[in-house]
Length: 203
Image 1 (spheres, rainbow, N blue to C red):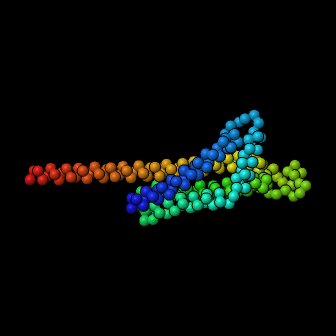
Image 2: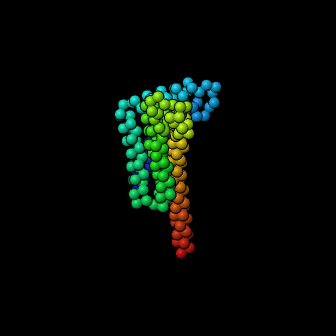
Image 3: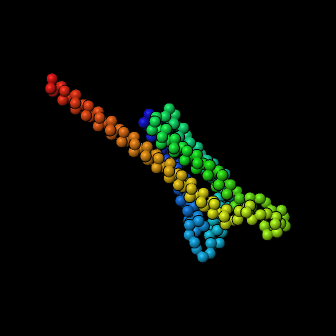
């Protein structure tokens, strides 16, 4: 059972670290868009936009590998939560919630953002040909600008990174709790054995 849990933990930690690596490689593109305040942000918006268009145009095998990695993580959670113990329900249950939250962010923000950027159709509604926001074709409150769309994408990467770090922290917490429990059980067994030996000597 311990070997099964160790392998299932590997199935969770492996994809999680893989996704964090992808997000880290995107951080240089997101940094100036979201975190810094350079005098002119337009070049950085353009760089991020070009990067996202390149990712969207990548071969299908790239997205398939990504989805296989996502499925591998889910397989690890299913394996660990099959006939779960109390510790598994606490740590793995919370980890699964965070993992599913990450998948939700990926589907609703990142995938959708890639499609919007690749198509260049910024905003929540399409303008009729010849119309503009200024001419009254679309309320400014309903329009999401190019800059805001790219900021949301960068923020989604940050949120996803925090969620995945939370998964790693919970898995590390579970490992520590299990080792602590095993050490306490071993200490109790040792003390019980010493008491037995002491009792035999008295006899």
